[in-house]
Image 1 (cartoon, rainbow, N blue to C red):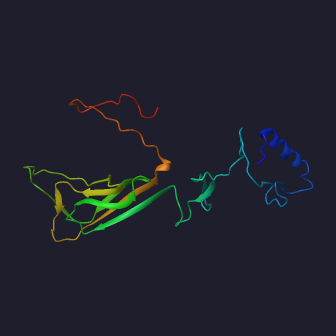
Image 2: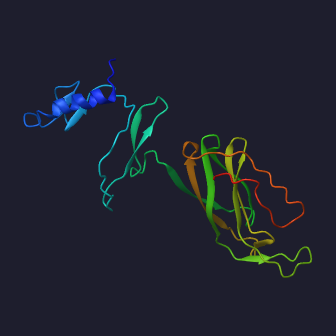
Image 3: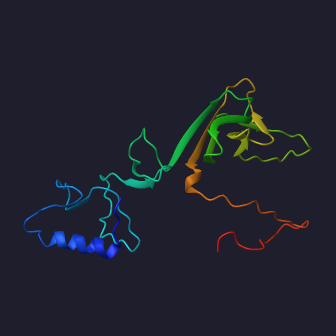
Length: 210
């Protein structure tokens, strides 16, 4: 494969462009250019590459992304396609008839080595009664939900602490929304251990992002 320095490539383009009155499209490596300029073959750019004005997207426009595949090829990612690949996914899980309001371990089967999963909202559809265990008659409870990794996949836990169904025979349902995105789009930092020294306040030694 023959390659050209950037300044020579620009010169070649300019030479073709001088005949713009004769040709409406200019082709390099092809005699049937489909655009104003078409390069058929490999191209390497070592200097700057400037893209002109990009018009803002309108509501009716479809947005796409250019991504690099594992074989270093560039392909288009159409996020408007409901069945195609996307930068991120929102998945809603409807978990029916758990043990009262308690979901101890729900395995999503989402591969933790490839994806990050975050719970973003959760709701439960049955009336609850607070427990007076622990001599705490003025207990209060907030919904608790989280995602954790177990055996290589993402799992979900959900519960109302110190509370349970008022009607113990009622069949309850959790609706849990999650955000799932590829680890290619995120950076995993090392674990940061924070010694609180029996205090309620603390400060990081250094910011993870500066």
